[in-house]
Every structure is written in structure tokens, then in C-alpha cells.
Amino acid sequence: MYRIVSNDQIAADLKEHVIKPVIPEKYLDEKTIFHLNPSGRFVIGGPHGDAGLTGRKIIIDTYGGWGAHGGGAFSGKDPTKVDRSGAYIVRQAAKSVVANGLARRCIVQVSYAIGVPEPLSVFVDTYGTGKIPDKEILEIVKENFDFRPGMITINLDLKKGGHRFLKTAAYGHFGRDDLTSHGKLSSHSSQTSLRPRNMGSC
Image 1: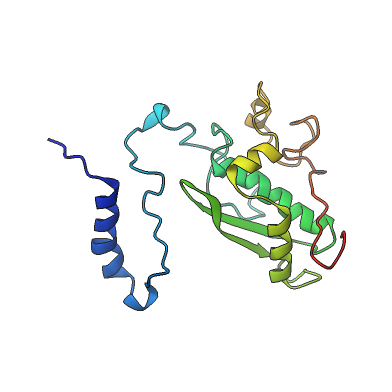
Image 2: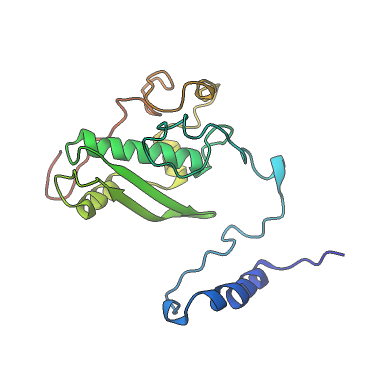
């Protein structure tokens, strides 16, 4: 017979029996943030609770092995899944850094916790090609892009409807001008004019 365990009990047990035995005490204090089932108990699985749990061809859908990939597939997932929407917005952010002349090459990485809208971290690496330090470019990126999934969906118009994602089943998700009327989703022209503090428009 199954016993219902509360989310609070799960969190307490994880801290006591998993985290404390593994993480040295010097790394844990009252400011430590634990993300333990932040969206609550996960009791509904399958199509009723989620969509797009599996994926395929993740490398050919993106950069063909040349660029880094977070490992999450796109196809079959709605915009609330940062595997898809997050990958779209970080591409736009990285392209904007290059298009605005801040670097010749750039990667932008974000990490999320389920149920927490703000990303846990944002990282920028220009591979030594930046015209200014990467930490300054990071601040510019954070000032100009909203990485919350809901705002990504709005800003990239990802809930437009119809069969707009149907074309992504072939020939990849990026480098195309035919996926949205304004090229917002993944076209070569999808970049933002960055306005860093005290620098004007780049």
C-alpha cells in the first residue's frame, strides 16, 4: 500500500539523508537556496501532466556539433519548456552580441529550475573575441533580454497558433527566414539592438 509523502517531508529527507552527507558543511549556510521540487509534488505524469518528454536529432536541429548544446530536445515541446524557448532566446542574445560588434563569437547559457521563472544563472563566453570584458557583456545581455519563460513566449510570439512549428520537423530550427512572418523565431536577422549602460547604442 502506498503512503502519500508530503513535499515538505521529501525536501526535509533529501536535505538530511542526501545533501548533508555529500556536501561539506562549510558550503551550506542560512543563505543556501535549495530547489527541491519547487513546483510541488510531481504526481501526474505522461501526456496528462506534460508534453514533449522525448526528443530526437537535437544536434542537427541546432548547430551540427559546432556549437554547444544543453541536451534538451525541441520538437514536441510547447513554449513553456525552456528546452525549446530557452534555446531560442539564448541564440538571439548571442547573435545580438555579435551583430552589435561586441564580439566576433559568443555563446550564452542559461540554467533553470522547474517552477522558478527567473534563471538560476546566465553565462556569456566570447572565446576571447570580446571588445569589452565578458562580465560587462553579461550585464548588457541581462539588461536587454528577459529570460523568464513566459516573457520569452511573449517576446518571440511563440503562441501565435496554427502549424507554425510544423516546419521545424525538417531542416532544423535555426538559420531560417520562413518560420515566422517577422523572422522572430530563428532567422539570420533575429537580433536585438543592445543598449548597454554608458555606451549608447552599439
